[in-house]
Image (cartoon, rainbow, N blue to C red):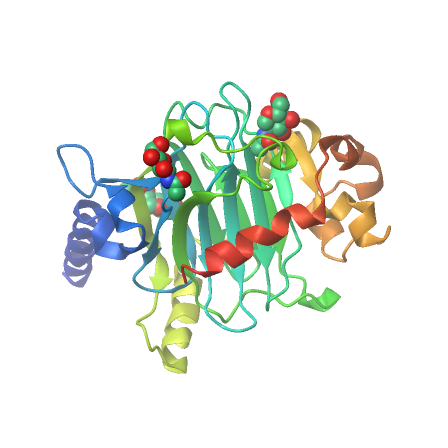
Length: 327
Ligand SMILES: *[C@@H]1O[C@H](CO)[C@@H](O)[C@H](O)[C@H]1NC(C)=O
Ligand SMILES: *[C@@H]1O[C@H](CO)[C@@H](O)[C@H](O)[C@H]1NC(C)=O
Ligand SMILES: *[C@@H]1O[C@H](CO)[C@@H](O)[C@H](O)[C@H]1NC(C)=O
């Protein structure tokens, strides 16, 4: 009987969540309201963020999260998207903040987007990786997700891991394990650096530039109230050990995930901070060998040299100052 009632309760909660996957249940617009649209017959199921020469736009989750598997489907700006940057990221609001970034750098028609990811722990980022995707991200919706637990953080695209950041406190790298993070998304003008290092500018005759989002899924994550206290963090730690995202097999990469990461590394990686000899001064940061599993850095990523893509550290600086404005 007890089991029956708990099943009933579980089903009720689950169904509520499924029906409630509306944008405004979990998110609100942070800026550029005039460029935000809710198309379709079921308003709030899809949200479109637009960029014009007057303003970009963005949204944020109402609540912060500590651990979980969080995902969103995104369809990027079609046609000539050069100069535009569409982001989906999580960030905490502390001075020494934590942040996990997906940033989509647009391109001229027919040329590939770049997906840039980054990880900040306690205010320190500089961990950019850039890949090409294996599909056209403007043709359809694709799922971008973050799985975050006590052992690792996986960045996934259509449920395939493209990057992993393992806990490495033993190597002196702070882990993202106590700062709840909000989910953000925005579209903005990054023409000074985003496309071919700033050589292709935004073509404003094509405005508005529109990215579409749907299926906001935060149902498998621990959310906290605004103004949470330490006890609330403990509730998230507890939930971690009772949830699928905090249990094996999610505490380590599976063989198929390792194989997919190898494929990413071999065929899709175009920039990796671990391999940027100018930035690392030939000493890769300690976490690098752990995060590219079973592959030694010296051999496998030579294809990902930075020189040929004209990408430099300076290219990255405008994005944070711009995005921080929305926090
Ligand atoms: C923005 O674009 C519109 C339409 O092309 C144009 O009329 C306007 O002058 C532009 N504004 C700025 C600030 O560039
Ligand atoms: C845009 O296309 C060019 C030419 O194919 C490519 O070099 C570049 O990596 C692509 N992406 C971006 C964001 O510049
Ligand atoms: C939401 O995400 C969780 C974890 O990835 C997944 O199990 C669940 O099926 C997703 N729900 C929907 C409605 O997509």
